[in-house]
Length: 398
Image (cartoon, rainbow, N blue to C red; front, side, top):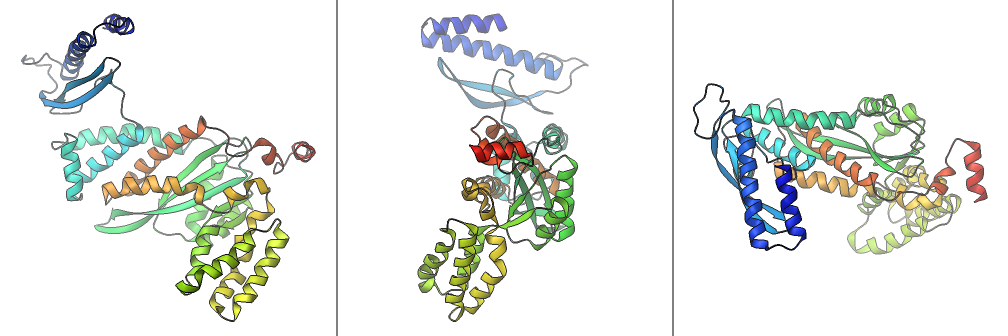
């Protein structure tokens, strides 16, 4: 079959008649699928043999885009198990994970009408528990390997953010926090370092999560960028001795909640003068000045500013080249958007393992994209954060 495919490709490259080539490809694809399905079932179509494992169960349509044009395939379905032609590009891990979670919700009887429709659209109205179990095991193996891999090198910055999804737990539907941790190493590369779930955001939860990252080798963390989680702040200080940067964007939203809508534009203009300063010292001085100016009219806002100043301006003690990235959790917004988009499709996850399966698969693919993209931060700017005095000296000299 490999030789036949090479001949077909050569015909295409030589400019053979496109219709003829499509017909040849369609014929070869049909023969290959028949042979592969025969191997899956243990017997040819229609044959009665004791070694038969399962039977065919109709077909599903699938378009195959080739260099000779589009070919409509009729892919055989099986009564037990599943079949996917080896010559087609397999679905990406995240798409498989989404399919697995949808089907798992379906067989547990906790899916919505929309999920039922999706299962049927995928040709899975007769999906079995054993079929879903095999699919889940395949994905879990890759996701677990990714989320438990050793972390090498030094990671000065760590972003952590939470997205909430609905999960079935003990017969109830609960809102569960899905935590994603992303770091940047001294090589300037971003990586997804960990994913976890939890119903509580108290210090023990955060400490256990950060400790799990440390046990895998995470070290050198100097700044943890996250929202205002008191438990996380205390855990980060204990596990990594790191500074906490409160997300500037989220803080600004909280601050504006204490101001009437019509007066917000003027207040925003005043607050922005703080972050326009060139140094940490100037920003702290401007912060105090703005807080005092707003204190009489908006005492609750001024009180909030007094409490949050150190956390919101922590990023300004780090290299200025990094300020835009480390002032907030905005670098994780795209990841959260992808998680929410998939979660909206599912509605209610059957269990927390399904959450890890889907989110972990998404993060695995994102990590692969980052691995081949340009550096997130320059080596020169990161050298100033190194504990190696020679690297710091070379960065200053540059």
